[in-house]
Image (cartoon, rainbow, N blue to C red; front, side):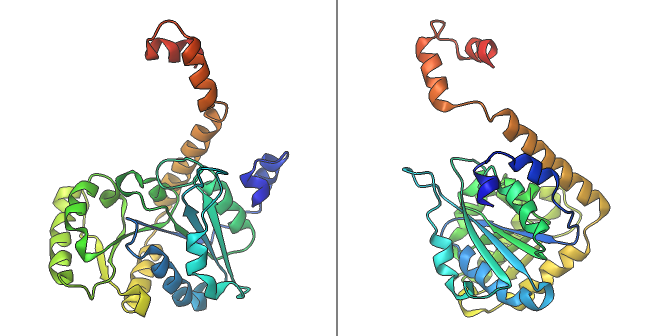
Amino acid sequence: MSFVENEAEGYEALLENLPLNDVCKTIGITGAPGAGKSSLTDALIEAFLPDFAKIAVLCIDPSSPFNKGALLGDRIRMSKWFSNQNVFIRSVATRGALGGLSAKTIELTDVLKAAGYNLIIIETVGVGQSEIDIAALADVTIVVLVPESGDEVQTMKAGVMEVGDIFVVNKSDRPGADGFVKNLNLQLSPSLHHKKEYLTIVKTIAIQKEGIDDLREAIKSKLSNLSATDGTKFLAEKAYRLISNKRMKDVDITELEQKLREDQSSNLYRFIKMYY
């Protein structure tokens, strides 16, 4: 994985020759910081091990501003799985990538599939509305909220709220949880989001493992209803992002700054047309 992430010589040939694993499923978990994504991920590992046998977790962490590495906060919270041979957990730095995902997440996911994992859980940074890329990578996308997220729902619904397949109201033992769920149901009305049916909402207290069985069944239901059309759209989204990343590979922000400093036109659009 480090070989691929660091784009060592020959990494593209390795990716081109990876064995196909079309039975592995991918779950994406997104939501604002502090919503309990890591605790939920920890609970789902335990819940799904009997069904999937080998589970991998990619924790997309914020980059260190100094060495661009991952801060490793999520791995610390899931330390109980370190000695389990059927669970693999790795932190991946965003390296400045927008959308809540590292630019290398797609390749790393394919490496894990080739390694024989049956389920991959991707936990994203948690940066709010821009965190929509996970929908292009996951078979099922889970949006984690807490009862205090009332105002946040209003700002998120044009982005993250539209890509979620399952909405989890975590820490549902807090005051106002039932009222928040009722309001969330109204916000997720099919007529407002061009959906055929209401989206699934599950109440949990992840740290106490409450509601996890309901969430597991909701996820399994979504996975079982995936169609061939979903698979083709999924591949197209992945291809689009891989092509975009490849075309942007040679664009360096420091070089851009230097060229802009030397440019005399002061017209950004003319500058882009000239060089890119």
